[in-house]
Image (cartoon, rainbow, N blue to C red; front, side, top):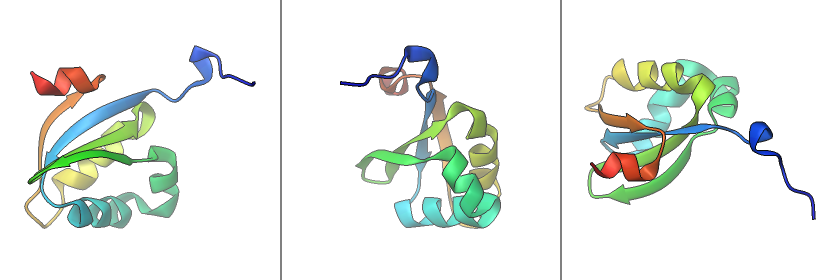
Length: 89
């Protein structure tokens, strides 16, 4: 079985966003495009009502934050953390 070294794994940051999933997807695609989407590799981890947890690559975090900040719809970044447990605080 092949395993990746820890230094080769993608480092992710978890972003807690208040809004709808479709709006988050649309705003990221509009701002950073398809290649930016591929480099950010967003994964929607969980959804609780209006709050969504999105995991993104560490290198593309600034682009994703900018995309969510300039979205015309009502999106708000509540918190960013390196762990899921850190978002709960």
